[in-house]
Image 1 (tube, each protein chain N blue to C red):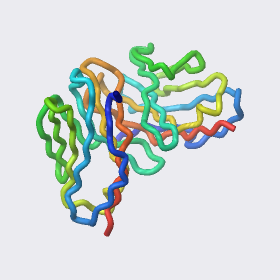
Image 2 (image 1 turned 180 degrees about the vertical axis):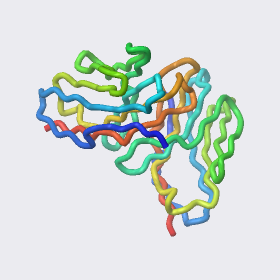
Image 3 (image 1 turned 30 degrees about the vertical axis):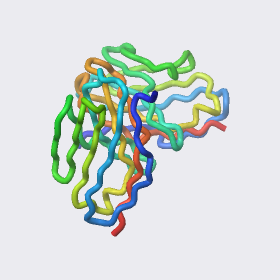
Length: 111
Length: 114
């Protein structure tokens, strides 16, 4: 079983839509959950991070963690063409140095 | 905004040659990392570095790889004898502490082994 699984998409939505991106993970020991955005041929850029379960909101972005089902989500409201990118979920153990990334979901927002 | 700088942006090398990928982390950061991303695949952890020593490394990071912080600003990844399968994007990242809240990544070096 993979440590983190993410549907690679692509996901295509019209401008203004609400986007839902999701990952599942296998090890309940993971406590730290991140979402990165990656544009083509660029490094990942940290968007959101959460610790343990719960929600976190930042502007149009909401990150959600459900540890009971080992499920993490990123919601993008009022999506814009500039949101078109690959979105990577990432997880990490407490005190560990290694971050484990999902495969990334390719998102296209059409104007 | 502070950024992590990587050079070169693209490196082409012959199989068997040594390459050094260079990174300048954010100046007050203490933890440094290398990740790689083979085309179309996941971002994979290679190594983390703190206090002038490796703190964790992956199975990928074998004897062909080494890291160094030769001065107060640079952080390098050396591949001693490159193989075709080393072709990938290599990303350097840094954090101010062992932050479980994410890294700042550089834009990457695209390594092509021919």
